[in-house]
Length: 323
Image (cartoon, rainbow, N blue to C red):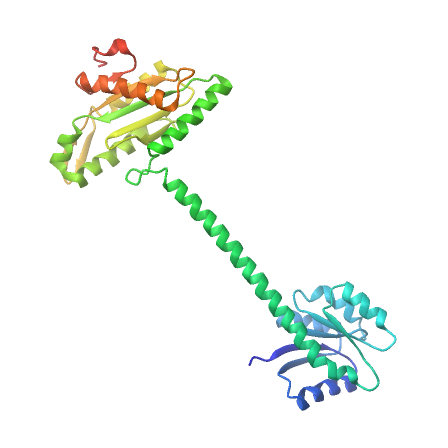
């Protein structure tokens, strides 16, 4: 069994001998350190973690009570003389765990082992409780962090690390709320890789994924920092363009389309050319998220059915090539 580390502040040699004799005769498992002054006691406390401190109420350079603020979480038992019970009461108010009153017969020494054991036990129970509470708090924080990470992952496309369809819808809904507050319009662009089935057949799943990743990187590079680029479907990408009217969003879509004209994607040592079609729509008051995205999907389908590699932003462009 590990010994109880006891710090005894006592300048009376007879009282020190009495305590040491008690420890020996009762075979108490104490690791006792005796100091006669407060300054020495403070030095010991800075060097060793004691389980309990026995503090005489009067020593040459002060009082045991003056030590209470220096103990940290080390419990203190104040030892006072007869007729000095007021000091003991004040000590309890100031944070001492217990007190003993010296009596001529030395009866307090018979109580000392019990008081020390109870004080040390209370400290250990308090430490275990504090440790359990800290562990619960840590567990709660870890769970909250895991929940946040899981929530974030639920809105991230694992392949491209862009926003997924769910997150895009959430952000479009946010932009609609902003529009309702400030009437600041915004637009969305929906792009789709042309002839993706042929690309998949030629390169296989891994090669097609490589193309998708490179296209995602290219789209992010071409867009502004305030724009949100996300993966809408297998080969489809959505761009949310805040505070931008239809004409501005259409220009951006055309820039995105042109960015792929001279671009070559390297996949497994082979150069691959890719084109994209785009639909563009600006938000109209009263539209729902689904209604708005249905509109831009309609424009994208018109671009695809008109041969691909083009931008469509309103019905009159159905039969027009934008380049």
